[in-house]
Amino acid sequence: MHNRREVLLLRTLPIALILLAVAPAPRAAQPAAVEPGITGQVLAPDGSPVTRGTVALLTAPITGRVGVTATIDRTGHFRIVPDAQGRQPLVISVPGYAPYRASVSVPPSRAMSLPEITLLEATYFHASFVTIDGEPLAASGLRRRSIDIDGEPIHDPLEHVRAEIERDGSITVGPLPPGRTLFAFDRPPFAQTRLPDANVTGVKRVIDGGTITITPGAQLHVDLFDDRGQPVPKHEVWIEDAIQPSPLSMTTVQTNDQGRAIFNRLASGRYRVWTRFVERCGNADPTMSRLVATGNSGVAHLRMVIGGRAAFRITTTLGPVLGRGVSLTPDPPPPPQRVSVSGRRLPIATLAPRGCSGVTDRDGRVVIAPFPPGPAQLRASLFNSSYIMNVNVPESGRETVIAVPDGLIPVKVINRTTQHPVEAQLTWVGGGGRVETITNANGDALLEAVGTSGGKLTIIAREYQTVEGNFDETPDTMQEVALTASPSARLTVRVVRADAKAPGDAVVELLARGPADVAEFAATDANGIATFTDVPPGPLQFRAHAEGFAAATVQVNEDSRGSIVITLTRAK
Image 1 (spheres, rainbow, N blue to C red):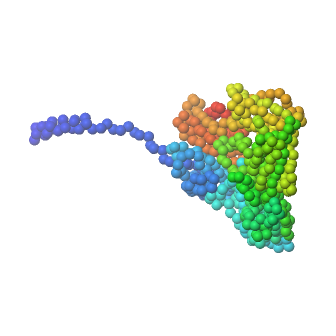
Image 2 (image 1 turned 120 degrees about the vertical axis):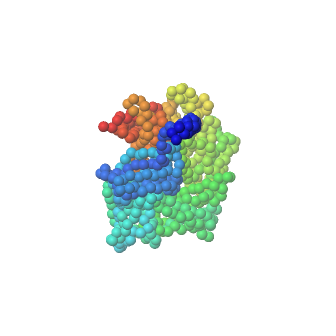
Image 3 (image 1 turned 90 degrees about the horizontal axis):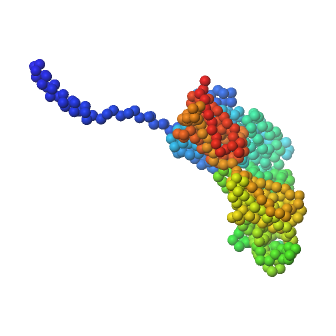
Protein backbone atom coordinates (compact mmCIF):
# COMPACT_ATOMS: atom_id res chain seq x y z
CA MET A 1 0.00 0.00 0.00
CA HIS A 2 2.76 2.32 0.90
CA ASN A 3 4.61 1.79 -2.41
CA ARG A 4 1.44 2.16 -4.41
CA ARG A 5 0.72 5.52 -2.70
CA GLU A 6 4.16 6.75 -3.63
CA VAL A 7 3.66 5.75 -7.27
CA LEU A 8 0.36 7.55 -7.39
CA LEU A 9 1.92 10.64 -5.85
CA LEU A 10 4.75 10.61 -8.38
CA ARG A 11 2.28 10.21 -11.25
CA THR A 12 0.09 13.13 -10.09
CA LEU A 13 2.94 15.47 -9.23
CA PRO A 14 3.81 16.48 -12.80
CA ILE A 15 0.17 17.17 -13.52
CA ALA A 16 -0.03 19.50 -10.49
CA LEU A 17 3.13 21.25 -11.56
CA ILE A 18 1.78 21.67 -15.09
CA LEU A 19 -1.48 23.10 -13.75
CA LEU A 20 0.51 25.45 -11.53
CA ALA A 21 2.64 26.52 -14.45
CA VAL A 22 -0.27 27.40 -16.74
CA ALA A 23 -2.45 29.00 -14.06
CA PRO A 24 -2.81 32.77 -14.63
CA ALA A 25 -0.97 35.09 -12.30
CA PRO A 26 -3.19 36.87 -9.79
CA ARG A 27 -4.44 40.27 -11.06
CA ALA A 28 -3.08 43.42 -9.56
CA ALA A 29 -5.56 45.28 -7.36
CA GLN A 30 -7.54 47.81 -9.45
CA PRO A 31 -8.47 51.21 -8.04
CA ALA A 32 -12.11 51.38 -7.11
CA ALA A 33 -14.23 53.25 -9.64
CA VAL A 34 -15.37 56.68 -8.50
CA GLU A 35 -19.08 56.60 -7.77
CA PRO A 36 -20.92 59.47 -9.49
CA GLY A 37 -22.54 62.01 -7.24
CA ILE A 38 -22.27 65.58 -5.98
CA THR A 39 -22.09 65.57 -2.19
CA GLY A 40 -22.21 68.32 0.37
CA GLN A 41 -23.58 69.53 3.69
CA VAL A 42 -26.05 72.35 4.23
CA LEU A 43 -25.81 74.50 7.37
CA ALA A 44 -28.18 76.96 8.98
CA PRO A 45 -26.98 80.56 9.49
CA ASP A 46 -25.80 79.65 13.04
CA GLY A 47 -23.59 76.87 11.65
CA SER A 48 -25.77 73.94 12.74
CA PRO A 49 -26.78 71.33 10.13
CA VAL A 50 -30.24 71.59 8.64
CA THR A 51 -32.39 68.51 9.09
CA ARG A 52 -34.42 68.47 5.87
CA GLY A 53 -34.75 70.04 2.44
CA THR A 54 -34.36 69.40 -1.27
CA VAL A 55 -31.45 69.79 -3.69
CA ALA A 56 -31.98 70.00 -7.45
CA LEU A 57 -29.94 70.36 -10.63
CA LEU A 58 -31.62 72.31 -13.42
CA THR A 59 -31.41 71.10 -17.00
CA ALA A 60 -32.70 74.34 -18.55
CA PRO A 61 -31.32 77.48 -16.82
CA ILE A 62 -33.47 79.83 -18.92
CA THR A 63 -36.79 78.19 -18.02
CA GLY A 64 -35.71 76.75 -14.67
CA ARG A 65 -36.72 73.18 -15.51
CA VAL A 66 -35.68 70.64 -12.88
CA GLY A 67 -33.48 67.71 -13.92
CA VAL A 68 -32.65 65.54 -10.91
CA THR A 69 -33.41 66.02 -7.21
CA ALA A 70 -32.20 64.65 -3.88
CA THR A 71 -33.21 65.07 -0.25
CA ILE A 72 -31.13 66.44 2.61
CA ASP A 73 -30.83 64.04 5.54
CA ARG A 74 -31.05 64.85 9.26
CA THR A 75 -27.31 65.61 9.40
CA GLY A 76 -27.56 68.18 6.62
CA HIS A 77 -25.84 65.95 4.05
CA PHE A 78 -27.00 65.28 0.51
CA ARG A 79 -25.91 63.29 -2.51
CA ILE A 80 -27.29 64.12 -5.95
CA VAL A 81 -26.29 62.18 -9.08
CA PRO A 82 -26.04 64.36 -12.22
CA ASP A 83 -27.33 63.07 -15.53
CA ALA A 84 -24.49 64.71 -17.46
CA GLN A 85 -21.26 66.66 -17.08
CA GLY A 86 -20.86 70.38 -17.66
CA ARG A 87 -22.06 73.57 -16.05
CA GLN A 88 -25.44 73.23 -14.34
CA PRO A 89 -27.45 75.42 -11.93
CA LEU A 90 -27.94 73.94 -8.47
CA VAL A 91 -30.74 75.06 -6.14
CA ILE A 92 -31.40 74.20 -2.50
CA SER A 93 -34.74 74.58 -0.76
CA VAL A 94 -34.88 74.30 3.04
CA PRO A 95 -38.10 75.43 4.76
CA GLY A 96 -37.63 78.54 6.88
CA TYR A 97 -34.47 79.76 5.12
CA ALA A 98 -33.69 81.79 2.01
CA PRO A 99 -33.49 79.70 -1.17
CA TYR A 100 -29.92 78.99 -2.27
CA ARG A 101 -28.59 79.10 -5.84
CA ALA A 102 -25.20 78.12 -7.24
CA SER A 103 -23.57 76.99 -10.47
CA VAL A 104 -21.70 73.69 -10.56
CA SER A 105 -19.30 72.60 -13.32
CA VAL A 106 -19.76 68.84 -13.18
CA PRO A 107 -16.55 66.96 -14.17
CA PRO A 108 -16.54 63.93 -16.53
CA SER A 109 -16.55 61.60 -13.51
CA ARG A 110 -19.78 63.30 -12.35
CA ALA A 111 -18.30 63.08 -8.83
CA MET A 112 -17.68 66.18 -6.76
CA SER A 113 -17.51 67.06 -3.07
CA LEU A 114 -18.76 70.58 -2.37
CA PRO A 115 -17.68 72.61 0.65
CA GLU A 116 -20.16 73.38 3.41
CA ILE A 117 -23.04 75.56 2.20
CA THR A 118 -24.40 78.07 4.72
CA LEU A 119 -27.89 79.41 4.10
CA LEU A 120 -29.12 82.95 4.70
CA GLU A 121 -31.92 83.87 7.07
CA ALA A 122 -35.37 83.98 5.50
CA THR A 123 -36.85 87.31 4.37
CA TYR A 124 -40.60 87.78 4.02
CA PHE A 125 -42.70 90.49 2.38
CA HIS A 126 -45.85 91.51 4.24
CA ALA A 127 -48.61 93.90 3.20
CA SER A 128 -52.31 94.50 3.66
CA PHE A 129 -54.77 95.98 1.19
CA VAL A 130 -57.82 98.22 1.46
CA THR A 131 -60.28 99.79 -0.95
CA ILE A 132 -60.50 103.55 -1.42
CA ASP A 133 -63.22 103.48 1.25
CA GLY A 134 -60.87 101.84 3.71
CA GLU A 135 -62.52 98.43 3.56
CA PRO A 136 -60.13 95.46 4.00
CA LEU A 137 -59.37 93.68 0.76
CA ALA A 138 -58.30 90.04 0.60
CA ALA A 139 -54.79 89.77 -0.81
CA SER A 140 -55.44 87.08 -3.40
CA GLY A 141 -53.97 87.38 -6.88
CA LEU A 142 -50.56 88.76 -5.92
CA ARG A 143 -48.09 88.62 -8.82
CA ARG A 144 -44.33 88.53 -8.29
CA ARG A 145 -41.10 88.44 -10.30
CA SER A 146 -37.55 88.10 -8.90
CA ILE A 147 -34.31 89.23 -10.56
CA ASP A 148 -30.65 88.84 -9.60
CA ILE A 149 -27.63 91.16 -9.52
CA ASP A 150 -27.42 91.16 -13.34
CA GLY A 151 -31.17 91.69 -13.87
CA GLU A 152 -31.68 88.07 -14.92
CA PRO A 153 -34.83 86.25 -13.73
CA ILE A 154 -34.65 84.07 -10.64
CA HIS A 155 -36.80 80.99 -11.05
CA ASP A 156 -38.47 79.07 -8.24
CA PRO A 157 -38.35 75.48 -9.57
CA LEU A 158 -38.87 73.87 -6.15
CA GLU A 159 -41.76 76.21 -5.27
CA HIS A 160 -39.85 77.45 -2.26
CA VAL A 161 -41.63 80.82 -2.09
CA ARG A 162 -45.12 80.60 -0.62
CA ALA A 163 -47.90 83.14 -0.14
CA GLU A 164 -49.97 82.91 3.03
CA ILE A 165 -53.15 84.89 3.68
CA GLU A 166 -53.30 85.92 7.33
CA ARG A 167 -56.47 86.04 9.42
CA ASP A 168 -56.71 89.81 9.02
CA GLY A 169 -56.62 89.47 5.23
CA SER A 170 -53.02 90.61 4.86
CA ILE A 171 -50.47 88.52 2.99
CA THR A 172 -47.03 87.20 3.82
CA VAL A 173 -44.79 86.03 0.96
CA GLY A 174 -41.50 84.18 1.35
CA PRO A 175 -38.88 83.14 1.95
CA LEU A 176 -37.80 85.42 -0.89
CA PRO A 177 -34.62 84.80 -2.91
CA PRO A 178 -31.75 87.26 -2.40
CA GLY A 179 -32.05 89.92 -5.08
CA ARG A 180 -34.99 92.13 -6.02
CA THR A 181 -38.59 90.91 -6.06
CA LEU A 182 -41.21 92.94 -7.91
CA PHE A 183 -44.84 92.69 -6.80
CA ALA A 184 -48.20 93.54 -8.36
CA PHE A 185 -51.72 93.24 -7.00
CA ASP A 186 -53.88 91.72 -9.75
CA ARG A 187 -57.45 90.93 -8.75
CA PRO A 188 -60.44 91.93 -10.92
CA PRO A 189 -62.31 94.21 -10.87
CA PHE A 190 -59.70 96.33 -9.08
CA ALA A 191 -56.76 98.07 -10.73
CA GLN A 192 -53.69 96.00 -11.45
CA THR A 193 -51.32 97.83 -9.10
CA ARG A 194 -47.56 97.75 -8.85
CA LEU A 195 -46.37 97.45 -5.24
CA PRO A 196 -43.07 98.57 -3.71
CA ASP A 197 -40.12 96.39 -4.73
CA ALA A 198 -38.54 94.16 -2.09
CA ASN A 199 -34.73 94.31 -2.01
CA VAL A 200 -33.61 91.12 -0.27
CA THR A 201 -30.10 91.09 1.21
CA GLY A 202 -30.50 88.49 3.96
CA VAL A 203 -30.45 91.16 6.68
CA LYS A 204 -34.11 92.15 7.12
CA ARG A 205 -36.41 89.47 8.49
CA VAL A 206 -39.60 91.17 7.25
CA ILE A 207 -40.02 93.80 4.55
CA ASP A 208 -43.23 95.62 5.45
CA GLY A 209 -45.15 97.04 2.51
CA GLY A 210 -47.67 98.62 4.88
CA THR A 211 -51.32 99.16 4.01
CA ILE A 212 -51.79 99.72 0.30
CA THR A 213 -54.92 101.30 -1.18
CA ILE A 214 -56.21 99.58 -4.30
CA THR A 215 -58.39 101.77 -6.54
CA PRO A 216 -61.08 100.70 -9.02
CA GLY A 217 -58.67 101.75 -11.74
CA ALA A 218 -58.82 103.91 -14.81
CA GLN A 219 -59.51 103.27 -18.47
CA LEU A 220 -57.23 104.24 -21.31
CA HIS A 221 -58.71 104.95 -24.74
CA VAL A 222 -56.16 104.83 -27.56
CA ASP A 223 -57.45 106.19 -30.89
CA LEU A 224 -55.49 105.35 -34.04
CA PHE A 225 -55.67 107.42 -37.25
CA ASP A 226 -54.01 107.25 -40.63
CA ASP A 227 -52.43 110.23 -42.41
CA ARG A 228 -55.84 111.21 -43.85
CA GLY A 229 -57.39 111.41 -40.41
CA GLN A 230 -59.39 108.22 -40.84
CA PRO A 231 -59.71 105.72 -37.96
CA VAL A 232 -57.66 102.52 -38.25
CA PRO A 233 -59.79 99.51 -37.25
CA LYS A 234 -58.64 95.98 -36.41
CA HIS A 235 -55.13 97.14 -35.50
CA GLU A 236 -53.15 95.75 -32.56
CA VAL A 237 -52.17 98.01 -29.64
CA TRP A 238 -50.30 96.96 -26.51
CA ILE A 239 -49.05 98.75 -23.42
CA GLU A 240 -46.42 98.19 -20.75
CA ASP A 241 -45.34 99.72 -17.48
CA ALA A 242 -43.10 102.70 -18.22
CA ILE A 243 -40.66 101.46 -15.55
CA GLN A 244 -39.00 98.21 -16.58
CA PRO A 245 -38.60 95.48 -15.52
CA SER A 246 -42.14 95.21 -14.25
CA PRO A 247 -44.41 92.60 -12.65
CA LEU A 248 -47.47 93.98 -14.45
CA SER A 249 -49.10 91.72 -17.03
CA MET A 250 -50.72 93.51 -19.94
CA THR A 251 -52.74 92.17 -22.85
CA THR A 252 -52.78 93.17 -26.50
CA VAL A 253 -56.00 94.86 -27.66
CA GLN A 254 -57.37 95.30 -31.17
CA THR A 255 -58.97 98.56 -32.20
CA ASN A 256 -62.73 98.52 -32.87
CA ASP A 257 -64.43 99.81 -36.00
CA GLN A 258 -63.91 103.38 -34.75
CA GLY A 259 -60.14 102.79 -34.40
CA ARG A 260 -60.23 102.75 -30.59
CA ALA A 261 -58.43 100.31 -28.28
CA ILE A 262 -59.64 100.24 -24.65
CA PHE A 263 -57.49 99.19 -21.69
CA ASN A 264 -59.12 98.62 -18.30
CA ARG A 265 -58.00 98.31 -14.66
CA LEU A 266 -55.01 100.64 -14.92
CA ALA A 267 -53.60 102.02 -11.69
CA SER A 268 -52.33 105.57 -11.45
CA GLY A 269 -48.99 105.83 -13.22
CA ARG A 270 -47.17 106.11 -16.52
CA TYR A 271 -47.52 103.61 -19.34
CA ARG A 272 -45.90 103.20 -22.74
CA VAL A 273 -48.35 102.47 -25.56
CA TRP A 274 -47.05 100.53 -28.57
CA THR A 275 -48.43 99.84 -32.03
CA ARG A 276 -47.17 99.15 -35.54
CA PHE A 277 -47.14 101.48 -38.53
CA VAL A 278 -50.28 101.36 -40.64
CA GLU A 279 -48.13 100.08 -43.53
CA ARG A 280 -44.82 98.26 -43.85
CA CYS A 281 -41.59 100.02 -44.87
CA GLY A 282 -40.19 97.69 -47.51
CA ASN A 283 -39.40 94.48 -45.62
CA ALA A 284 -39.58 96.19 -42.21
CA ASP A 285 -42.60 96.25 -39.90
CA PRO A 286 -41.70 99.20 -37.62
CA THR A 287 -43.31 99.94 -34.27
CA MET A 288 -43.85 103.23 -32.49
CA SER A 289 -44.76 104.20 -28.94
CA ARG A 290 -46.01 107.08 -26.84
CA LEU A 291 -46.02 107.72 -23.09
CA VAL A 292 -49.30 108.36 -21.30
CA ALA A 293 -50.25 108.95 -17.66
CA THR A 294 -53.40 107.70 -15.95
CA GLY A 295 -55.08 108.58 -12.69
CA ASN A 296 -56.77 106.46 -10.04
CA SER A 297 -60.07 106.51 -11.92
CA GLY A 298 -61.80 107.97 -14.94
CA VAL A 299 -60.70 107.78 -18.56
CA ALA A 300 -57.37 108.82 -20.08
CA HIS A 301 -57.09 109.48 -23.82
CA LEU A 302 -54.25 109.08 -26.30
CA ARG A 303 -54.38 109.94 -30.00
CA MET A 304 -51.84 108.30 -32.29
CA VAL A 305 -51.33 108.96 -36.00
CA ILE A 306 -49.68 105.88 -37.45
CA GLY A 307 -49.42 106.92 -41.09
CA GLY A 308 -47.92 109.80 -43.03
CA ARG A 309 -44.60 110.83 -44.53
CA ALA A 310 -41.36 112.46 -43.50
CA ALA A 311 -39.56 114.88 -45.87
CA PHE A 312 -36.02 116.16 -45.32
CA ARG A 313 -33.38 118.17 -47.10
CA ILE A 314 -29.85 117.29 -45.97
CA THR A 315 -27.25 120.05 -46.48
CA THR A 316 -23.69 121.03 -45.53
CA THR A 317 -21.76 124.29 -45.90
CA LEU A 318 -20.52 122.88 -49.23
CA GLY A 319 -24.00 122.20 -50.56
CA PRO A 320 -26.59 119.43 -50.56
CA VAL A 321 -25.74 115.88 -49.47
CA LEU A 322 -26.67 113.94 -52.59
CA GLY A 323 -26.96 110.21 -53.21
CA ARG A 324 -26.61 109.27 -49.55
CA GLY A 325 -28.76 106.80 -47.60
CA VAL A 326 -31.02 108.17 -44.87
CA SER A 327 -32.92 106.04 -42.36
CA LEU A 328 -35.55 107.07 -39.85
CA THR A 329 -36.53 105.24 -36.67
CA PRO A 330 -39.32 106.17 -34.23
CA ASP A 331 -37.92 107.37 -30.92
CA PRO A 332 -37.59 105.51 -28.67
CA PRO A 333 -36.83 102.34 -30.63
CA PRO A 334 -38.39 99.07 -29.44
CA PRO A 335 -36.48 97.31 -26.67
CA PRO A 336 -33.78 95.00 -28.05
CA GLN A 337 -34.09 91.25 -27.82
CA ARG A 338 -32.04 89.77 -24.98
CA VAL A 339 -29.09 87.85 -26.38
CA SER A 340 -26.82 85.63 -24.31
CA VAL A 341 -23.26 86.64 -25.09
CA SER A 342 -20.29 84.61 -23.91
CA GLY A 343 -18.37 86.45 -21.24
CA ARG A 344 -21.28 88.84 -20.62
CA ARG A 345 -19.85 91.17 -23.26
CA LEU A 346 -22.03 92.98 -25.76
CA PRO A 347 -21.15 92.73 -29.46
CA ILE A 348 -20.23 95.84 -31.39
CA ALA A 349 -23.44 97.53 -32.50
CA THR A 350 -24.26 97.29 -36.18
CA LEU A 351 -24.14 100.48 -38.20
CA ALA A 352 -26.60 99.20 -40.80
CA PRO A 353 -29.60 101.47 -41.54
CA ARG A 354 -32.61 100.87 -39.32
CA GLY A 355 -36.29 101.62 -39.71
CA CYS A 356 -37.62 103.18 -42.90
CA SER A 357 -35.05 104.49 -45.34
CA GLY A 358 -34.46 106.38 -48.58
CA VAL A 359 -31.72 108.04 -50.66
CA THR A 360 -31.18 111.79 -51.12
CA ASP A 361 -31.58 113.24 -54.61
CA ARG A 362 -29.34 115.83 -56.31
CA ASP A 363 -30.84 118.56 -54.08
CA GLY A 364 -30.28 116.55 -50.87
CA ARG A 365 -34.00 115.80 -50.56
CA VAL A 366 -35.45 112.52 -49.35
CA VAL A 367 -39.02 111.45 -48.62
CA ILE A 368 -39.57 108.51 -46.29
CA ALA A 369 -43.00 106.92 -46.32
CA PRO A 370 -44.90 105.62 -44.60
CA PHE A 371 -43.74 107.40 -41.47
CA PRO A 372 -45.94 108.86 -38.71
CA PRO A 373 -45.47 112.27 -37.11
CA GLY A 374 -43.64 112.63 -33.83
CA PRO A 375 -40.15 112.17 -32.38
CA ALA A 376 -37.73 110.11 -34.43
CA GLN A 377 -34.04 109.43 -34.89
CA LEU A 378 -32.51 110.29 -38.26
CA ARG A 379 -29.35 108.59 -39.53
CA ALA A 380 -27.59 110.00 -42.60
CA SER A 381 -24.80 107.94 -44.16
CA LEU A 382 -21.84 110.16 -45.04
CA PHE A 383 -18.72 109.00 -46.88
CA ASN A 384 -16.83 107.66 -43.86
CA SER A 385 -19.32 107.74 -40.99
CA SER A 386 -22.96 108.19 -40.06
CA TYR A 387 -24.48 111.39 -38.69
CA ILE A 388 -27.36 110.82 -36.22
CA MET A 389 -29.70 113.35 -34.68
CA ASN A 390 -33.14 113.54 -33.06
CA VAL A 391 -35.88 115.13 -35.13
CA ASN A 392 -39.59 115.76 -34.83
CA VAL A 393 -41.62 114.76 -37.88
CA PRO A 394 -44.47 117.29 -38.36
CA GLU A 395 -48.00 115.98 -38.87
CA SER A 396 -48.34 118.10 -42.00
CA GLY A 397 -45.51 116.21 -43.72
CA ARG A 398 -43.72 119.47 -44.58
CA GLU A 399 -40.02 119.42 -45.37
CA THR A 400 -37.45 119.74 -42.59
CA VAL A 401 -33.94 121.05 -43.33
CA ILE A 402 -31.08 119.18 -41.66
CA ALA A 403 -27.81 121.13 -41.59
CA VAL A 404 -24.94 118.69 -41.13
CA PRO A 405 -22.09 120.44 -39.26
CA ASP A 406 -18.49 120.68 -40.44
CA GLY A 407 -15.47 119.17 -38.78
CA LEU A 408 -13.31 116.05 -39.15
CA ILE A 409 -11.48 113.92 -36.60
CA PRO A 410 -9.03 111.30 -37.91
CA VAL A 411 -8.53 108.45 -35.43
CA LYS A 412 -6.17 105.47 -35.30
CA VAL A 413 -6.87 102.60 -32.86
CA ILE A 414 -4.15 100.11 -31.89
CA ASN A 415 -3.47 97.38 -29.35
CA ARG A 416 -1.48 98.84 -26.46
CA THR A 417 0.72 95.76 -26.14
CA THR A 418 1.26 94.59 -29.71
CA GLN A 419 0.76 97.96 -31.49
CA HIS A 420 -1.39 96.10 -34.04
CA PRO A 421 -4.48 97.80 -35.49
CA VAL A 422 -7.82 97.10 -33.79
CA GLU A 423 -11.32 96.93 -35.29
CA ALA A 424 -13.41 99.25 -33.13
CA GLN A 425 -16.60 101.27 -33.10
CA LEU A 426 -16.19 105.02 -32.62
CA THR A 427 -18.90 107.36 -31.37
CA TRP A 428 -18.67 111.14 -31.13
CA VAL A 429 -21.39 113.09 -29.30
CA GLY A 430 -21.33 116.84 -29.83
CA GLY A 431 -22.48 119.62 -32.10
CA GLY A 432 -26.12 118.73 -31.56
CA GLY A 433 -25.82 115.20 -32.88
CA ARG A 434 -23.94 111.92 -32.81
CA VAL A 435 -21.44 110.48 -35.27
CA GLU A 436 -20.60 106.77 -35.58
CA THR A 437 -18.06 104.85 -37.62
CA ILE A 438 -15.80 101.80 -37.47
CA THR A 439 -12.08 101.47 -38.12
CA ASN A 440 -10.73 99.81 -41.24
CA ALA A 441 -8.22 96.96 -41.42
CA ASN A 442 -5.40 99.40 -40.58
CA GLY A 443 -7.19 100.67 -37.48
CA ASP A 444 -7.96 104.02 -39.15
CA ALA A 445 -11.28 105.87 -39.08
CA LEU A 446 -12.58 109.31 -39.99
CA LEU A 447 -15.34 110.94 -37.98
CA GLU A 448 -17.25 113.52 -40.05
CA ALA A 449 -19.74 116.24 -39.08
CA VAL A 450 -18.31 116.53 -35.55
CA GLY A 451 -18.78 120.30 -35.24
CA THR A 452 -16.31 122.69 -33.61
CA SER A 453 -17.62 123.08 -30.05
CA GLY A 454 -16.14 119.92 -28.54
CA GLY A 455 -17.75 116.71 -27.46
CA LYS A 456 -17.17 113.20 -26.16
CA LEU A 457 -15.36 110.39 -27.99
CA THR A 458 -16.10 106.75 -27.08
CA ILE A 459 -14.23 103.78 -28.51
CA ILE A 460 -15.59 100.24 -28.08
CA ALA A 461 -13.94 97.05 -29.32
CA ARG A 462 -14.53 93.37 -28.66
CA GLU A 463 -12.26 91.99 -25.94
CA TYR A 464 -10.91 95.47 -25.09
CA GLN A 465 -11.67 97.95 -22.36
CA THR A 466 -13.85 100.87 -23.45
CA VAL A 467 -12.12 104.26 -23.73
CA GLU A 468 -13.90 107.60 -23.31
CA GLY A 469 -12.49 111.12 -23.68
CA ASN A 470 -14.04 114.59 -23.30
CA PHE A 471 -12.86 117.52 -25.44
CA ASP A 472 -13.61 121.18 -24.73
CA GLU A 473 -12.82 121.90 -28.37
CA THR A 474 -13.04 119.55 -31.30
CA PRO A 475 -9.53 118.27 -32.06
CA ASP A 476 -8.16 118.90 -35.55
CA THR A 477 -5.24 116.47 -35.40
CA MET A 478 -4.93 112.68 -35.59
CA GLN A 479 -6.05 110.97 -32.38
CA GLU A 480 -4.08 107.77 -31.78
CA VAL A 481 -5.73 105.60 -29.13
CA ALA A 482 -4.14 102.49 -27.60
CA LEU A 483 -6.64 99.98 -26.19
CA THR A 484 -6.03 97.60 -23.30
CA ALA A 485 -7.33 94.06 -23.57
CA SER A 486 -10.32 93.27 -21.36
CA PRO A 487 -9.96 90.65 -18.65
CA SER A 488 -10.73 87.21 -19.99
CA ALA A 489 -14.16 85.72 -19.35
CA ARG A 490 -12.54 82.26 -19.17
CA LEU A 491 -10.26 81.72 -16.20
CA THR A 492 -8.24 78.82 -14.88
CA VAL A 493 -7.24 78.39 -11.26
CA ARG A 494 -4.45 75.99 -10.27
CA VAL A 495 -4.55 74.40 -6.82
CA VAL A 496 -1.29 73.03 -5.35
CA ARG A 497 0.10 71.75 -2.07
CA ALA A 498 3.16 73.22 -0.37
CA ASP A 499 5.34 70.88 -2.47
CA ALA A 500 3.76 72.29 -5.68
CA LYS A 501 1.90 69.04 -6.42
CA ALA A 502 -1.86 68.85 -6.99
CA PRO A 503 -3.76 67.75 -3.86
CA GLY A 504 -6.30 65.75 -5.85
CA ASP A 505 -10.10 66.00 -5.72
CA ALA A 506 -10.01 69.72 -4.94
CA VAL A 507 -12.94 72.06 -5.59
CA VAL A 508 -12.56 75.77 -6.37
CA GLU A 509 -15.34 78.19 -5.51
CA LEU A 510 -15.84 81.52 -7.26
CA LEU A 511 -17.43 83.46 -4.42
CA ALA A 512 -20.66 85.36 -5.06
CA ARG A 513 -20.31 89.12 -5.52
CA GLY A 514 -23.18 89.67 -3.10
CA PRO A 515 -26.38 88.09 -1.78
CA ALA A 516 -28.09 88.52 -5.17
CA ASP A 517 -25.33 86.66 -7.02
CA VAL A 518 -24.57 82.93 -7.20
CA ALA A 519 -21.41 81.09 -6.21
CA GLU A 520 -19.77 78.85 -8.81
CA PHE A 521 -18.03 75.55 -8.09
CA ALA A 522 -15.56 73.74 -10.36
CA ALA A 523 -13.59 70.55 -9.68
CA THR A 524 -9.86 70.41 -10.46
CA ASP A 525 -8.48 67.99 -13.02
CA ALA A 526 -5.48 65.66 -12.62
CA ASN A 527 -3.14 68.66 -12.86
CA GLY A 528 -5.01 70.59 -10.16
CA ILE A 529 -6.62 73.03 -12.62
CA ALA A 530 -10.23 74.25 -12.34
CA THR A 531 -11.78 76.12 -15.28
CA PHE A 532 -14.42 78.85 -15.08
CA THR A 533 -16.26 80.32 -18.07
CA ASP A 534 -18.44 83.41 -18.43
CA VAL A 535 -16.67 85.11 -15.53
CA PRO A 536 -17.95 88.65 -14.80
CA PRO A 537 -15.64 91.69 -14.93
CA GLY A 538 -14.24 93.34 -11.83
CA PRO A 539 -12.38 91.98 -8.79
CA LEU A 540 -13.03 88.33 -7.93
CA GLN A 541 -12.48 85.99 -5.00
CA PHE A 542 -11.63 82.30 -5.36
CA ARG A 543 -11.57 79.76 -2.54
CA ALA A 544 -10.05 76.26 -2.83
CA HIS A 545 -11.21 73.26 -0.79
CA ALA A 546 -9.69 69.78 -0.49
CA GLU A 547 -10.08 67.02 2.06
CA GLY A 548 -7.37 67.17 4.71
CA PHE A 549 -6.40 70.75 3.83
CA ALA A 550 -7.41 74.13 5.18
CA ALA A 551 -9.48 76.21 2.75
CA ALA A 552 -7.54 79.07 1.15
CA THR A 553 -8.86 82.24 -0.54
CA VAL A 554 -7.24 84.59 -3.06
CA GLN A 555 -8.34 88.01 -4.32
CA VAL A 556 -7.94 88.50 -8.07
CA ASN A 557 -7.99 91.88 -9.79
CA GLU A 558 -8.77 92.42 -13.46
CA ASP A 559 -5.09 92.93 -14.31
CA SER A 560 -3.92 89.75 -12.54
CA ARG A 561 -6.13 87.09 -14.11
CA GLY A 562 -3.39 85.49 -16.21
CA SER A 563 -1.94 83.16 -13.58
CA ILE A 564 -4.04 82.25 -10.55
CA VAL A 565 -2.53 79.76 -8.11
CA ILE A 566 -3.92 78.76 -4.71
CA THR A 567 -1.60 76.92 -2.33
CA LEU A 568 -3.21 74.67 0.29
CA THR A 569 -1.70 73.68 3.62
CA ARG A 570 -2.52 70.67 5.75
CA ALA A 571 -5.36 71.17 8.18
CA LYS A 572 -4.29 71.16 11.83
